[in-house]
Length: 131
Image (cartoon, rainbow, N blue to C red; front, side, top):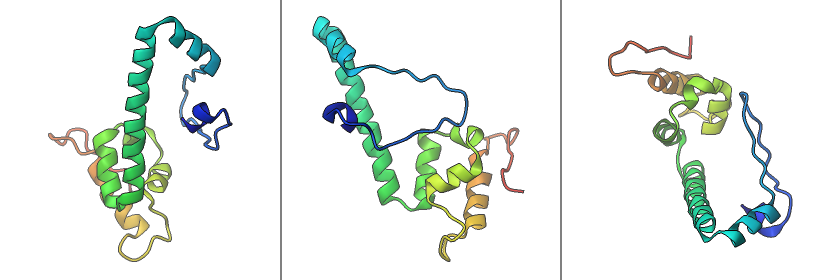
């Protein structure tokens, strides 16, 4: 959003881990659409507001929570990640590294988190990412 507001290139890069569709919207074209339609402007504002709220939730999660609470947050907000994203990326996102100090060893935390991540109420789809 900073890039859109300041007309500067973003310092953030993204990498898709699976086939994706990327949509580019040029700022000038977006402004023209908003000028033509108050309804589109209202929709755009609502989308922007929801994006800001979501971005703040994720920032708070990453800066305020320990790895266990980050895991819980991720399970609540995006449980599909555990089936679609390789474990090393999830571990990195959660802030769990091989050199993580005493209370959170890499294997211990990943083992716990990953056993919990695919648990189904009837046990039919249970699987573990850690062997």
